[in-house]
Image (cartoon, rainbow, N blue to C red):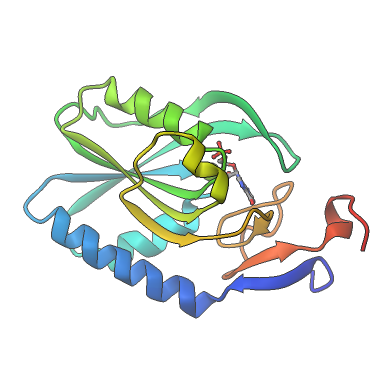
Length: 181
Ligand code: IMP
Ligand code: MG
């Protein structure tokens, strides 16, 4: 594993500090409101778990699974719902929690889909954002880190389903995905 990792981009401490900072803002914004946080499987598992525990406002948690990426590093542009919400979100304040926004295709589709269900509000919290995200007109209210256009792993993010369990964000060595070393 050590050889597959190129470098640590965001350390565990930096991630945890940022999650607490975001939780403080979310607590203030949703005080007195009925909050439902929606994690997007599988990448958002870590950020959902940490964010949920850092929040003080009463909340419920639900999950959606959508597919936009295959086993490679490029977006297919096709979004499929693999698992829908268990909750009826009509009248609810929904906060979508995402691992990363790259092209923004997944998120813009998802927000559009959720808004059609008549919720009181839909906002987005993403741990990471890549530069291409500004091409898609989605408002992301809570953002952890803006990162360079590199393929990253860890803290829920995978390459071919591996490395999700790393507690930090790292970049993948080129030999892992077929580049030259
Ligand atoms: P988008 O539709 O291009 O914004 O892609 C969003 C999804 O692609 C994310 O939720 C991730 O699951 C995946 N993804 C995008 N960039 C990366 C990356 O650098 N590493 C791992 N997964 C990524
Ligand atoms: Mg994702």
